Image (tube, rainbow, N blue to C red; front, top):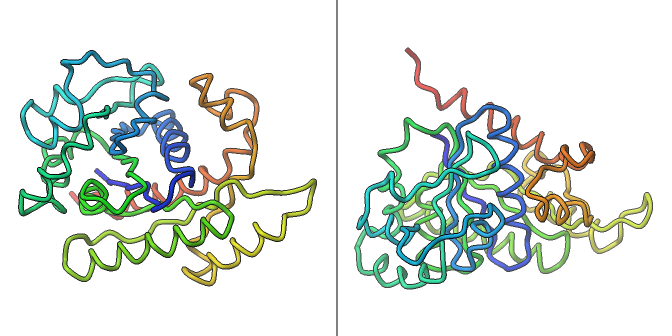
Length: 263
């Protein structure tokens, strides 16, 4: 199983949108995909239309190992290949548990070991704060996708995210590497990119190199429309808007080939 953290250390960077679109497309292409909502705001759980009862287990119980792994994983209505470990408002209470466990940064990775042969891809929507939950998400990841708004704020989020990743690498808490930087809400007027967006994307390329910067997600109401309709952009007839995710899925496919053990 290839575990991908969708992480960016500011709000409004497109993390949940990227996670949702990527998960739906991967599952449609035949990859058994597990999604994990690790953000206490639990937008991914909402977008996947999972309405939990008060007594149903979530990521909180999964991390505390108070229920079986299977009881924490739910099928989604989107696709037979797409499953979710959801979150709710109580997820914030796991911060102290992770902090006091002594193995907080690697706890989620350990908890996922029993399902490593069940799924090909695991996508984790990380919280936008430098929190204990964020640390355990990156600790569980094989690779990171970093969505960042094509703006000054987005560039700052990228720098903070890369700094956190480097810190965790330095102490041996993760071996994860960046798979791609995904510019989000790239603003264009007609066929002309705005100066702010151009400067921000150029700054991203200078920070990480040309090869790691994926095609931009342009500012468009079509993404919100796809989310609200529980659909993909392609289903709505906007195939061209899926191009950034097609490039990302090709990168994931290559990683899966490398990760797959030789018989």
